[in-house]
Image 1 (cartoon, helix red, strand yellow):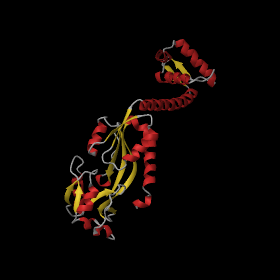
Image 2: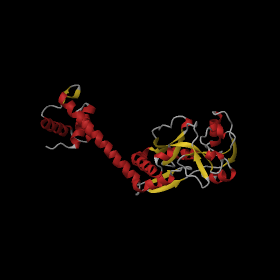
Image 3: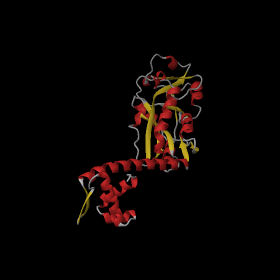
Image 4: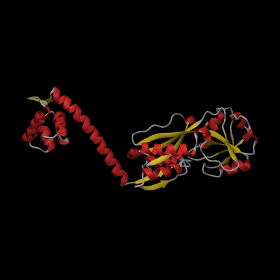
Length: 304
């Protein structure tokens, strides 16, 4: 006889239940039919697989060895079958993608073409990261781009329903008007920025509060004179009003604005993909695609 997967499941069920009667009932077979099947398998393997007495059915040493391999094979096949089910589920659902003011949204959209060309895609772009994460937790967004500043502690960890996949880092710089002395300074420190007018924004993400806490650690209170969201006309205001703002090094700047490193500002942003558990099979490829797109667009030397 040829060994088949159903035979391995039968052996495992006999071992799990400790009874031929219980195993036969669970399999929907007459007990004598299952007994005959076990005898044929014992002939195939060349020895007794189970010991039978009034206390039940227990594996012999040979049976334990066969069961160990059978259980490993079945676990692998069951995991593979689950991956196939997840893949079919992905094909039948609308994939809801979200971000809030992310500089990497174009890279994400490009990555979706080879990753999920068969999907129905819906884009969700709320006004704040807090709102975005609320939508993700509520199951109204499936995949979201979010950033995490190093000054806010370690990156978030998943909870079973939501996972986080880090895929890149960016240093934080200061954006200044190109014709300001700050733009030509040989070296900038936070102290050099203490007397400047600043851009930040109020709202659910509390960016203005974060800026105040950061500057307080350097011994000054920032003079926040402009309240502008990240996707607003910050560059134009910096250029014409001569103010400053912290920005990710990978964020494009407007004409007339430059980014400068701040020598004593040890602050970086980790770029994360936050995702619902059912989209986890997409994450390895999505992270690879995003990372590759970022390397093409931003040479490492520009971030040193």
